[in-house]
Length: 185
Image (tube, rainbow, N blue to C red; front, side, top):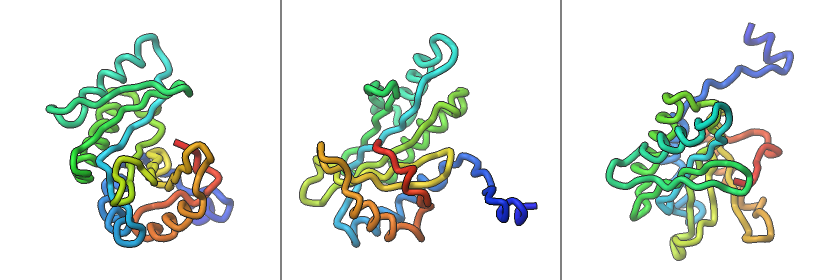
């Protein structure tokens, strides 16, 4: 049956998983050695709060309390109606950051907000200027894939860098095959 579905152009649906997000540890080694980029220790979980009255507030409380019990996440809203949970770790500790991001995702999913989750991001910067991210790896949970986002300030995106990063990470983490789905964060 799976073969028939693939012949008809119907792919197998991907069950949302956070395992590929944790695999970003391996990708970080390639980003450092091949592109001079290191994790900044900053990342986010983005979701859209819709549905029953007060549910957005409930989701924000769950997200804000997830992760490290010493350091609380920052919950903000953007101009597009999305809620963004910012997590960070000093010294660019990617392992702990990924654990925190996975915990925020899982806490929201277990509280009944799984369908609201949009994406999770992890920021990378050049070693000489860690304050200004040059690359954001975006993980789309519902598809189980990543795509690189390399901003060029107000001028748009550095597509050449995004394609180079994609090429170097294809065998390490699942990359989004349809580059038309690569939306700005």
